[in-house]
Length: 460
Image (tube, rainbow, N blue to C red; front, top):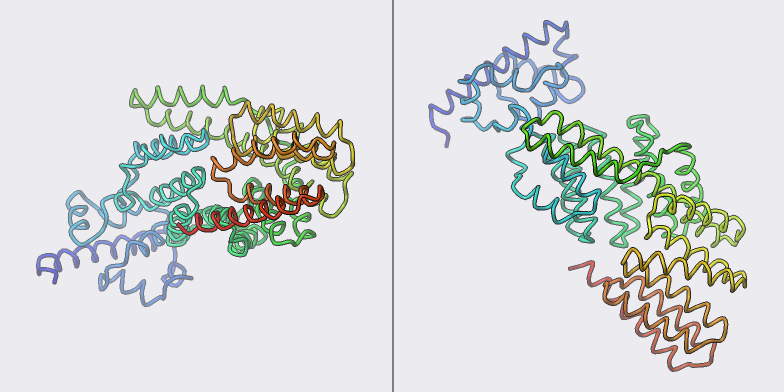
């Protein structure tokens, strides 16, 4: 039970908070009803102003924003008041943001853009949500979630991104909660739970269409994610619609060089070392903005590629080829080897379907060259599978087998079970065409084994 001394201190804090709220409200010409709506009742505001109750930190945060004053103005009043507030349970972190924490959060965001997930994790490790401002705690949960997403730790990403959504909702910040929800949907998508992915992305779409979030980049990401959800759920008409909406959202995107972004980051780190945190923040934000612009353009390229796949499934091969070539153009201008390789692979498989073997081989070989330059085993595996199918079509069965085995070895070592399962199913079909029934059955068994391993990995 609280001591009499603590209880008396609590009363003192409640009285001071009530007086400060009443003073600001009357100065702004607001009634108690106007201040209360929509979260609180008039009687609740009246009780706070009379010092009869001590409001929660969440309630205080809402009232401070509505009165357009720092939370500290309502809470502390004086150094002694701050000590009293801590004694009855108000967090000292809410007395204002620590600027060094602010810079660390920004730097972690940039490291994530650079895919330096281990460095970002180390930078964030000392930060504890309960010792941060509510805004900083939201960003911490969000950044942790993004690190897990980038590192392929999708279950862990769900945990932190849910916390970020809850934090944003607790702050009554729609933009915060929906940005986190968009990533939460992506985490579910990567766990193959397309229904939950769609539910979260549809929530984001609702706030966009209601005009509550007007950021076109956020809209682009949500439209693209919805298109991918519908594609995986087999609703191709809706997928094509949202791919088009994504592509129409941004007509012009500037293509910036990674070299400039890295230079800005270096300047930011120099200012940070000198203790000039405001300038460090400024240059860090410039660096982050450039990385975000690159990501936006990369997303546009991959959206063209995904639209091509949807059109290909609808048997619009000419439309699909146009989208693949546009995607290749964008990704090559960005010097993004992984994305460009995937786009060349898609085009190679389309040309193979059209019986254009020579063109298909050129595209597949270019995909493999780019994939090897990126040193990404998944991308290399996909390019090798395209080449293997071309060899089979040319009746070079030994060459096809060798390429399939190389691809599957790479995918196995990368634990890319979904891709490996798809490759084995393709291989089984080709073996069946050759009349090699037993080998085809063996390949199907391996495909199902990879599917099983993939699902087990999701549950771990």
